[in-house]
Amino acid sequence: MVSTSRIRALGGPRYAVALAVDALGTGLLRPFLLLYGVMVLELSAPVTGIAMTVGVVMGLVCMPAVGRWLDRGARSTVVAASMLVRVVGVALLLATPAGNVWSFASAALFLGIGNQAWPAAHAALVATVAHGRERDAALAAARALRNAGLGAGALLATACLAGGAGAVLATAAATGIAYLLAAALAWSVHVRADPATAVIKGPAPRMRALLAANVIYVFCLNVPEIAIPLVLVTQLHASPVWSAAVFVANTVLVVSLQVPVTVLMSRFCRRTVLALAGVVLAASYLGFLAAASLGHGWGAPAVAMVSVVCTVGEILYAGSATALVTVLAPAPLLGRALARFQLSTGFGLAVSPAVITALASHGSAALWGGLAGATLLSSASLTWAGGGAPRREG
Image (cartoon, rainbow, N blue to C red; front, side, top):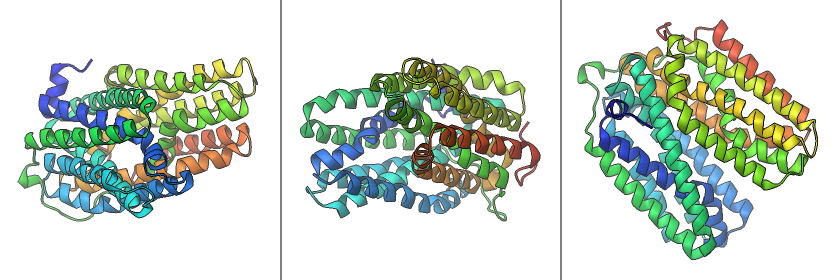
């Protein structure tokens, strides 16, 4: 449960409510956007998937502009704008006639822009109203709250699917209303950075090692949704119930443990925690490799058990990565630093499904061994390199 003090650290109860409503709306639509294209708009699955991918990738193009906007001192306005952009996306979605792929692609583009801009804007706002380790706890609390909202939204959307295409259409409309309400609440907080610290001086810190490592680390976010179901269903021939159980367990663990684990690890340097996250993730990938070798029968339960270790690694990563960026970047350049970080995150999330499926086609050893090796190398790079910025991450 998020305490009152942590909610205040997020900019007030209204902002916490805005986060919850926004997450609920995202949970309602994001997992079923593909189904909307297929069931409501009568598009083919491949065409729908390509349009969604293009929307995500093109959404990354807006990040430099978002970073510059944040560096001018804007905070809650950018958060609200990222939500309003998604309202436009939902409106276009609802107005798209059946069979019109270009209109659907435009809707996916606006949704992609909002989804990419929101994390950087939110992190900048939290960095403005909370400081030191309180900032880490606030970011962790926000992530826990967001995951709870996403999970609740996905459950509601799943229940609505029984109603067919009409219910999917109603779910999309509810998403638009949720985004609009969240935008109004976020804007009402009226948080800006001190104009004295919003003077732009020089380029943002490069943080090359951190950004490169983040591209690999972020693969862990797609492991419960893509890699584990792929292995369980296609290689171990297990019931899809196991995949659903792993996903639910991941959500519950993140919601319940993100804050306490982040607070517990606050005694250590953020860079050290991030490197440790890579070791834990790599160990879980090797655990998945061992579990997959057990074959049908014991394989599925073993994969489910190892997924808990993977989730712990994800929690360590999420609790330290963004917090590390906020302390590495000088205050006047925080927006551009967070934008660069979101670019690496978005790129990793965009390519990870293709990489995971390509590796899986060559067997479990290629999939889990490749992920483990790349993650360990990324973890080591964080220890060897200073990330291109002063070491203020204590």
